[in-house]
Image (cartoon, rainbow, N blue to C red; front, top):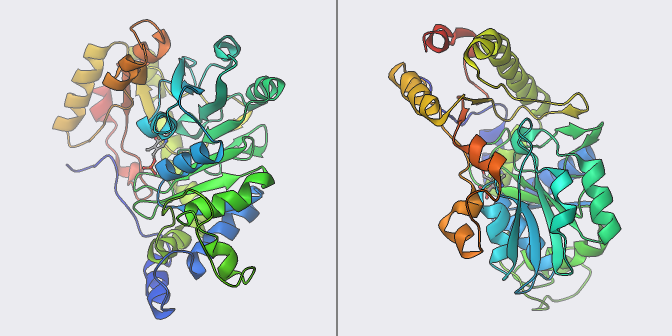
Length: 372
Ligand SMILES: Cc1ncc(COP(=O)(O)O)c(C=O)c1O
């Protein structure tokens, strides 16, 4: 494939920092670079606490443990998302209550939330699709009026903003992904952002196998022991070193990605109008994170033909989420066709174009699109 869908990149001092971590003789978790990443995110975003994790999936699992999700609890979730958004809660016995999305931003439709709230609702989980913010003011108002915590699955949205405020700073928790496909990456990685101080102490314990080891390392206790449930959710400092090399190049990475996104938009605008193709919608009050460029084709047949057309020309475009309410697991929870009509319709028509920091967009041959 001439142009893959994704390609990892070295942008700054990633390799030098990995060597430094080795020279520090600290390549397990919570070394110098993990602290640097945590502090960087806390300072830049203004969140109370950041804990680097092994993945966004694990940060979501930590959220479910922190909220004491129990069998039979309900969580309101979009069906149009990655499986982990939901599975992290289902693993604790929660029942997913699926909500449909807006046809333009593809974000959870806040107008459908209230009718799904019951006495068993324990969390509302939102996903800022492609790094464009959900309607957070309205969502937080609904959640606060029912005293239900919100979790922002912000896997796509690091440094995106809603009404001037960073995504990830609205909910009780937010979760980030540093998987290979994300704007900032260390291969596999994530973070839990905590906006409510009362959860910080327990989050540190859950992340450290249910022990108060973090307190021990800070000299707050003279030995550490088993105090709660937990697992091993902390990444190696080697990964944190790689990630820090990327985070400190935040401006450069975001500039590159904005450039790619803008060129896609500019070059495909007329073609899209002529062919009934929908381009991404970013409302004026949102600053997107430039994570992804997607197209919504007029019908599923055109989507399949378009992916094949690009593939023959060396461009690897891919589809995205399948409706989770119609998956094997979703059906076990009563999901049926027609429950989330917008999700069902969009999912069959969406195509993501190649998007990575080093993509040579200037030399992309847009005739391949106009040929279709
Ligand atoms: C919305 C969303 N949440 C969570 C994840 C899982 O992220 P990770 O691979 O870091 O666990 C993804 C993966 O791409 C995602 O798209």
